[in-house]
Length: 380
Image (cartoon, rainbow, N blue to C red; front, side, top):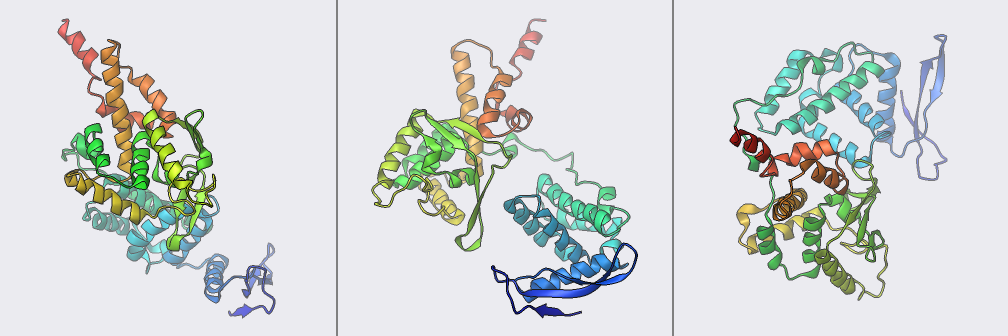
């Protein structure tokens, strides 16, 4: 088997291909010429996968099957999703199974892999994400490579130890309104002040914020249109895709945030080449995650909150916590019932989550969810 190079390249520079024989429907060997690839290495990899499927050998290298799985996944999932899954696979799955054939992997191998991962003290949610990736590779091999059973399914998912005490603070981290005021008060740069205020007062995901352009903000109606997210690649490259749940939504902005945004926009408009299709944060290019984290940590430390440093995603939790506290406060002032169902119905659209996810994540933050039960008991 050899790799050939066509004298005539495609418009995007692809010239390498392979030639093999494969059996047709009647079992007759016929020549097969592949499409052209950009590099010789890519052509070799594709040839290996082709032969693996054609010959249906007893020993199917796990690594090659996994590569084919991710290739197929890229056809149906967003690039950011595939990249994340592939990175997790490279870090926690490939090294354990790479030198094995997929049809020789047993339940015992899976259990040993699980034991090794549990020693690293990852959260159960992350461990089961890895479990799902490995399970999907085996599901794919059963459909495409004739593997008979899926030992990952038989081995079952990771389970948390029931004796571990988990506090509310460990379930979800956030900063209070008072802590946020301390944090924001030390920021003297208009870009970073606006950026962190935006995170706190909208609760948008980081990718959604980075993908935002000035055209997405309607200052006349105080509405932000959330319809895309930015996925950053290496060397400053990026892709813009649909939102995480493929749900477009509109977010109302408060007066405080609107005033800050208008102030910030006036500063940006001082650039002679300013355009409405610029990124709100970053102008002609997006803000790098490392830069964001650097300034976030810097301002937390300046504010004397080094023990309260949260992640960018946890600004999202802080936004929900802020609204829960204010909703409870206003309800008490008006002497009306705290209606959690109504609250989560309103918030699900704002946050781009289902009502069930909102309840599962944030219900414990309500301080008065059991008041009515206590009232019943007190009347006995």
